[in-house]
Image (cartoon, rainbow, N blue to C red; front, side, top):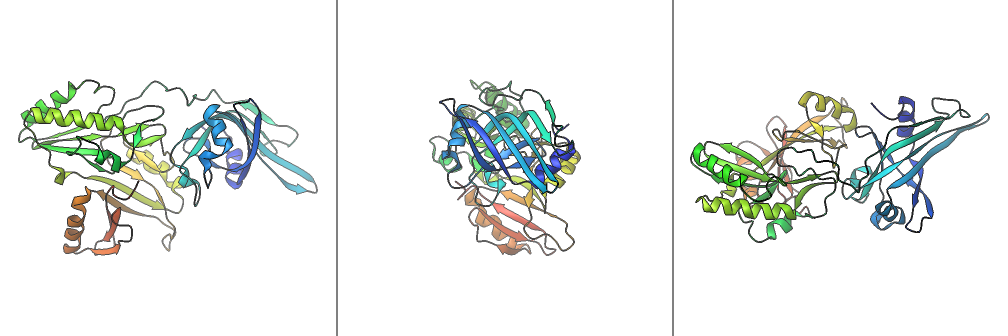
Length: 380
């Protein structure tokens, strides 16, 4: 249930500018106009900016003291005099990624305000009779909440050791691994279920594995291991993944197993819609998925790590009937991409666009259904 009333949500979604109050390290207040967006999935207010947002005083203030206030108001009429607005107090969670979704040219850094006190006037009450209430105590983003675990995900509140895919690949001792769309993967052919079970047993005995557990997929002919760091503010590779990858590879070598990177891949489903926020609740209900914590307005994930992720893309050119479309991204190691693209073209496909290669090539079948052949190259 939302902390906001339906009328308050409708008002917030029609406004673009508010005034944000923060407190600096000298305990002095700081108030500036900001753009904002109401996140209906997370029931929060999101704020970002352009041109060095993370260097601005408001951002530095929030890093040091997450307590903030935001006022959004306007004067819809001067005759008769009519004012309306809403004040939101709460704590702001600083996020290193996600800000690009707030608007064209926005920086990746952003913060998300979870309300603890809401006061509104002239929205669903008379302007001289404010509606004021407390809506609970938000989590302090500087303190990690008790971890909830899902397979292969390090459920930490904040991530401080994140690294790029290229830095992961450049690390010593990770030659068995390839970063694809949902983390670093390595496949080890075993030849039998019994050999695969022995490998899994060896992985389970790695020191610290319970603190950063990998996803492990066991098949009759091999074992695939996936590593990714998943937190409130991050989804990607970290130094923890480098250390765990080295230990998993060492366990494989002790059992006489060698990795086969040629069979590593992951799949991402990409529904497109003019307004992703309107269709995400349907897909969440139909799939039994949950919003990805670092990007809840864009991504849905299987809470048990079984099915492919769903990323919701805003369509710049909707279909003639106003509807959406779905396509698939197949992530492969960079060295496998050209061969995969050539095979798809030879099987009757056509190239739709390749200007984003080597990050991805978009192909289509004879009926116009599209697929991206994607790699981690060029995304840092």
